[in-house]
Image (cartoon, rainbow, N blue to C red; front, side, top):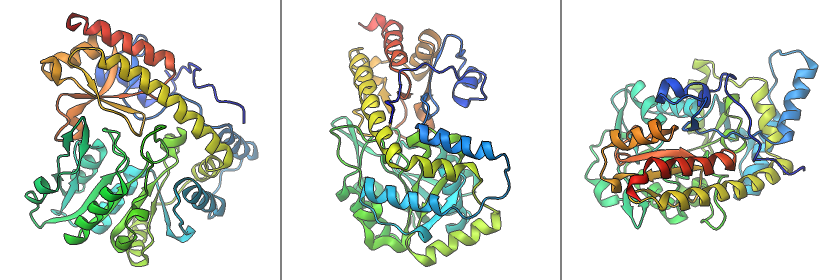
Length: 394
């Protein structure tokens, strides 16, 4: 494999790119002079194997209904076993149009209107959005901040239970905090779900993006196989390989009865994959793709170190230690500024578009989330802009 050039500055403006073309409307930051650090996709090309797969389909030129893609299912099986030590079966895999869609299917198929869905906040904002849109109640379990990292808070959470809760959605590794949950923590979560008769949906989309030296990601199904009858594991190659536009992800369910409930709902909704997504994933989940990911994580770790060193040198700012994902979670409360004040400096002065903390739920106040999956020159420039924007605090 030719070494990937993650330093290449690829102009995505004007390509119907949500991250760059929509940031003016969302944040008042023009792509002409701004830096897009919000939407969680990368400014990198995927492995060459993925491009070849697309070109092969395009060269054929006929885009009819695809068949059941055995290569896709076998690639998932190979990847999960070789990268995560998880032995799956092809029949366990249900394919959705991305993991937000998969989350919505789980909620729709396995809960009723008015049921409570537990989110460990602050957490990926789409969970709350689809839960509320489905007419379910969002039950927020705020994570406890200890020694600069998020921890589980069983004592505080027990007091919040009402008996109406039917599902817990876990983000593992955690977005936006970047925590890699330990096997013991995952077993505690599983035991809680069993004790309270909850379906556990474990979103593991960031599982491949663990920083060097950080704890190894443990698949929830491996940590707690005893709860297979109530466990759905969500996986996708889209975050790992920057192919989110393929809109493809999986619900991996070992328990046949639980899997049948989801399959019936998917059939009622007419959910099935297109032609390009499975071929892209099969090409990505390969030895070439594995080599590319190893290079990617090393590069992201370099970006992380540069960003954290620069941001943590600004009085009042604190970037949470990042174990996984490429999303830096920065606490601005030490500045003594209101969210409106520090956000105005980031967007108006530094010309950076970053996600607003409150959108992630309780515990997000006073924070912004920055996407570091961009060429290093942009990360360096973003740090310098932040230093200037908060220069009066130096």
